[in-house]
Length: 367
Image (cartoon, rainbow, N blue to C red; front, side, top):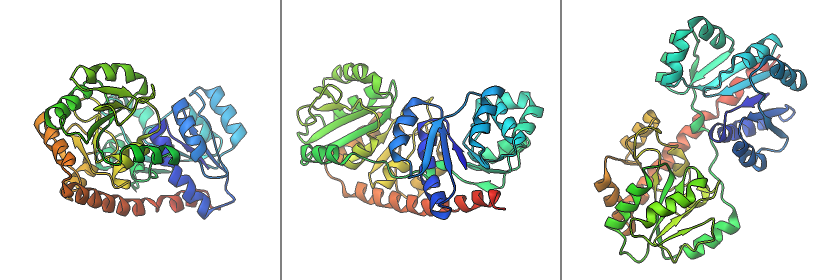
């Protein structure tokens, strides 16, 4: 079985699926492909025993044919929006069955595919199984000629983010008496918002610390300048800065969200405070029992709607609410822990639902 995702998020969502397939069919060879160096670095040490990773081929006929001739997959499983026409056509020609799971069509892709309806029908018609990410994706895929047999969201299937134990233990010692407000996966324009809210609400609290984890770690120097301009004493992780001696700490290293979610008194999910990004996965902090809030600019709306209705998170509408929730966290508001508990219960139920996918995929290749 061949499992393919574009980058880090999609690749990580394949880990529990690969593990479940290995449990159900230990003798089945499993290949995972992704297209970025970051995904390869993060997936490599986390893959179940016996599962192989390699980079996906570029979407030209010759490369696709060489890839398929070498690996000879019985089933190819594409995650989210990976619709590569040459690779899909070559797979069908070679006898490989295909599944598209957690399928989504972005507004831009939707507009492009509608200009070539025949090509859309051909590509989507190549799949033996399509499971859409949500109801909106289902409507778009079916309008383009695809046959959707149900829903399955890869974001609900990812494992809990890991943390390196020596690093976690060391930071827990440093943060023993601190309350950490962690702004996670921030984008340009968001760091100044969280820094100002922190300075306005809890700057003078001696046990309060603002930790900013930029989505792109190479922005560390830029983020440090932005935060320092708001009057906060700032340190950077990549330069060996100390968490205890600074009011704000820029965690500009990769692959450590699991560390910060475990340490956070409150997490603020980036990509959501300003429009254009669509937010980031709320189930990552939920799995680790970390209280979290988000801005209102999110694309994970069905999930967020469930979480908000369950009183498991809040969507903030402006700087005043951002400052208010920071102050509550620093004061040790017990309602935040209750909120985190409800989020964890929600994600536990959804994780159980996601287990149904592996048997369904295996049924496609059973004789």
